[in-house]
Image (cartoon, rainbow, N blue to C red):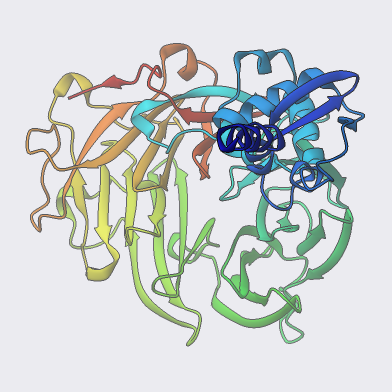
Length: 474
C-alpha cells in the first residue's frame, strides 16, 4: 500500500513538472524548468504559473515553427540548424515577444574578438545613399551610419532600427553621446548638432562664436569625441582659426574652449581626430596634412580641467635626424593600454609611445625584420591605424593587418629598449578583400570590427572565426 502511494506521488510529480503549449495550433510539451529558464520577466515564465489543474494546453497565437526554434534554444542554449530557415528579423521579433531576446543575443553573439582569426561576415548597407560618410560603433556591437544627410541605426543583430534625416546635406563626423543621442558635424555646414534617435528630432546645437573676432564665422566641426559628462568637438573657420569646444552633455552648452590657434602652420591646424582617455582624464588631439613635400602634423594632449597642454610633439621636428622626412601619416590611441600609435608615411613603420612616460622622443618602432614582407608607405596611398581590445589594426591602401602583443621571444619585430613588450604582425584579409577599395576608417564595437572603404557602399563587419584563414607572417 505504501509502495503504491509512493509510486502515485512520483508519477503525479513528474506530470506536474510538465506543461503543454498550443502554439498556432501545434501542440508542444516541455518541462517547467525549460520555459522558466527564459527568466522571471519572460512571457513563458508567467504562463508556467497557471493553475496546474487546468487540463487544457496554454494557447499562444504565434508561429509554431519559430517557437520550435526558440524552445530548442531554451533547452540547449544553442540555435538548431532549422533556425537558418528564418530571417534574423523574424527570430528577433519572436524572441522579443516571448521575452527571451537576451538568450537569442547570447546564442548569436560572436566569440571574443581576435584580429588574427577575423573574417568578413557581412556588410551593412543603408537603403538610400549607401555610401557611408561616417559611422560610430557601440560596445554592444551595434552601429550608427551617416550617409548623406541621414543617420541609420543597426542593432547588435544588424537589423535596421531606424533612420532620421538631419538638416545637413552631408555628415562628416558622428559620435554617440547617449544611448539614443548622436552628435553630428559637417565640413560644409556650421555647428555641432544633437539628434535624438528615439524621437527622430533635433534636440540642440552648439556654435563657435566670438563677438570680438569677426573671423569666427560659420565654424565647421572636424572631429568629435565624448567623455561621461562632456562632448569635445574641434571647430575651424574659413580663415583657419580653430579651437576645441567642451560641451556639457546634459545641458548642451559650451563649458570651455581649448587650444585656440591661428591655423596658419601645420602645427596649428585644426585637430582632425580627438580621443578622450578616461583613465587619465586627458584629451588627445592630432592633425595630419600631406602635400608635395610630404606629411606633417602634431599630437597634443590637453587636460580639460585646467585647459593646459600637458604634452605635445610635431613632425617633422628637431632631434629626429634618422627619421626626418618620415613623419606620421596616421595616429590612434589605445585608451585601455595607455599608448599612442603612429604610422610613418615613408617607411610604413608602426611606432608606439607609452602615455605614462612621454618625453621629447618617446617612440619605439616596431619594425619588420623579414625584407620580403616590409610594407613601405606609398606616395598617395591611404594609411589608417585603429586600436581595439589590445590590438592595433592597420589599413594600407585596401589591405588590413593586425599587430598583436605576444609573449614569445621568437618574433619578427624588434623589442623596444625599455622592454615594453613584443608585437607580431599578421594579415587579416584575403586578396579579394583588399581589392574592394582603399580603407577609409576602422572602428571596433563589441566583438566586431567595422571597416569602411573609399567609394564603396556599406560598412564591412568583421568577426572572429577559427576558419578565418589569417595569414601569419611569423
